[in-house]
Length: 110
Image (tube, rainbow, N blue to C red; front, side):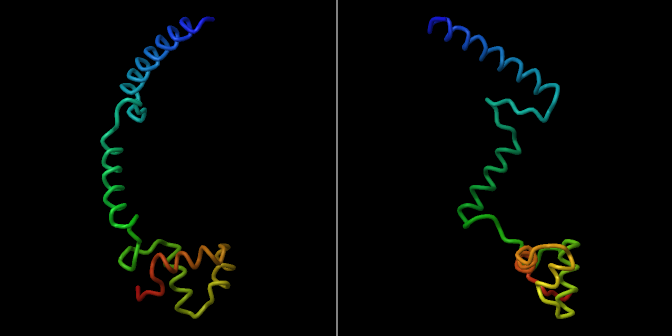
């Protein structure tokens, strides 16, 4: 094939691909047409820019509601168990237990 034929078929294929993407987007709302950004993607971009200018994603902090696993770890800490023993009982790594303690600001009075 010559370069002219290759370019000709590439253009035809590209047009057919774009047309099929538009048809698929009408049928299935989860399909994202490459040439268009959806509203949630734009909103996420705006949130990312805002958080980026503030130094990154907000930390969970002490005001976040505790997950079920965090509640269990919180109760275990109240009984003076070490992170190693908590990790062993919950079949987690010690690093993940320390991460949950840091993320939720444990121990808490809840």
